[in-house]
Image (cartoon, rainbow, N blue to C red; front, side, top):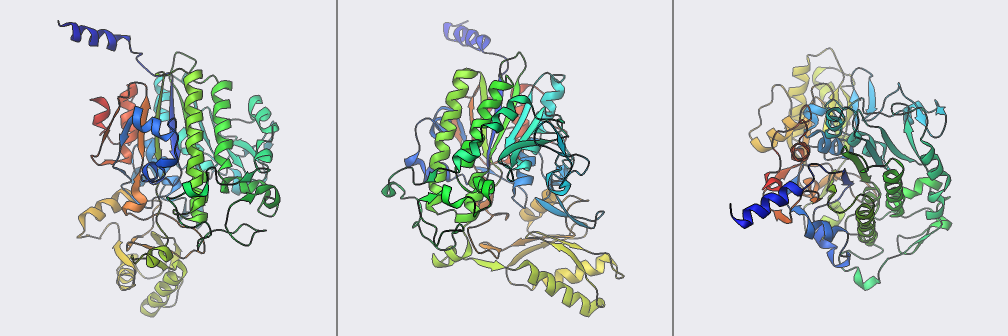
Length: 534
């Protein structure tokens, strides 16, 4: 055996057979291009460290719609799509409950915000992974280790903490906007751990809301975004325009008190402080088993929705988030040890330019009105089959119909005829009897449709079309704008490199399964990201 081969063999034997800690990071509403568009203003130790020392998958996409927070988090961690895991949107129409339901709702559990259970406002704070119909990579780690691995999920949003942590998690903690505290539900525990009560008692949200949000760098450095006072930007109550600086101390009481935290970049700061506290207090990465921490940064989404993807506010938010990522990596280096932890970073969806900006830029873009489409359907179906309320619920991608006297197949065929004549609709899909000649989008529809939870009709609007809105922008469509997200891998057993081969979001969980040598989640794709094993 040659000396080189012997050294390689010895080096491989010296490697630890499993990481002490896996950290799964989701950046809510992050377009892949933000890694590059804002790169001039990033430090060397945040996003750039992940990109240059880790592995960069430059062509990662979502492969279903709608591209939204609930389905996105569920898909990353289950390794499958809504057709299997059942989280078809953030909210959908429940035929059995005859109402809309929230993706993480569970009326059998209650809010835990301290050492007691609060049974008020069950509709808003009763949360669990009950509606997630597939196992997660975090579930499989729990099962494989016979419960010895610790799993904790964190986010400002409840769904951003709950779905990644899975069904068997030790904890999922999320932000409670009425109080500025982090909470959980009785699904996980009947009281908060003492260390979290102490963390909440520090009142960090109060401190952060007494700061001024100004540009972190000089104005001339913000050359990757539009003018500071652009159209379609959220104007906080107490202000007449959307320009820096924002004196939060003078604004937060008029803007919902603690509800303002997610709408400023300090929501990410608050979450980062919690993440470091969790690692220390729960001893993550300090035992013989692999632990798993999931972190979902949400302020990026709130700010994108409020100010748009070309705003100074969004650029500043990513410059600040880069510092949070650098701080987290430095903390993990010191607490867990370089090479002892594995990080993957992606997003739950991306985002599109709003139609006003597109038209001003001589590109295609229009608004559609969900309520108008519902009314048009009810009107024309009533003319054909008799006066009834046909549409039970509609959002930007799905239509649910009420049971009526006329057979459903007849209703659906007539509805398709109406919808295909409406301006802006690209494709109409009816599961069961529809045959779509656009095979690519047909495959997407099949991955998106869940038999019980999805609508009777799925819609795909033309490029640049989105629901009417007064500020910022949104997401949800099946165009690159909304599907193309970052995918960075760093740390334990990850070699430096990159690939431009197309990958889909359901490949993340099987990759983790094979890196950790644990079972695939129940419905996961069996196709990992091969380049990470070469």
